[in-house]
Length: 104
Image 1: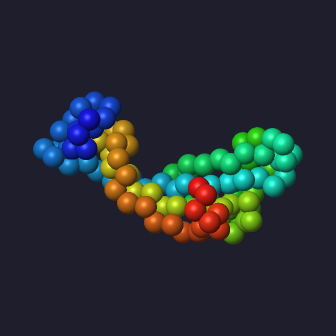
Image 2 (image 1 turned 180 degrees about the vertical axis):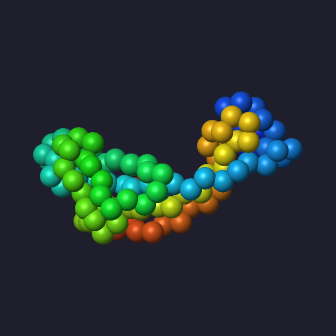
Image 3 (image 1 turned 60 degrees about the vertical axis):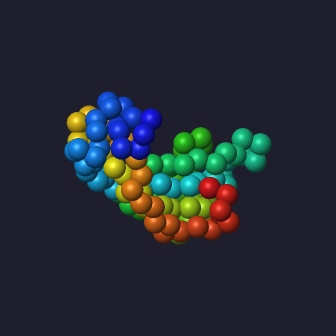
């Protein structure tokens, strides 16, 4: 599908430009999970947070932007469809933290 059309509803984004929405992605690998079950997770949040919760073991990971288990923090700017309101593209990405060496 062309980039100028919403992938969800087909709205012509050239005729009706998309809005913008900002969110944050946290790339986490919890050290408190057992080694055999440890996984990497990308946790999306609508705003910056002070703490995260491991989806596997429930451990609190804080501070979210400085904890060793948080490998990547990215600020995401999304295109938002003017018709259906869905995030239909990424307008920009800014890395706030990257200690994962590009693995996330």
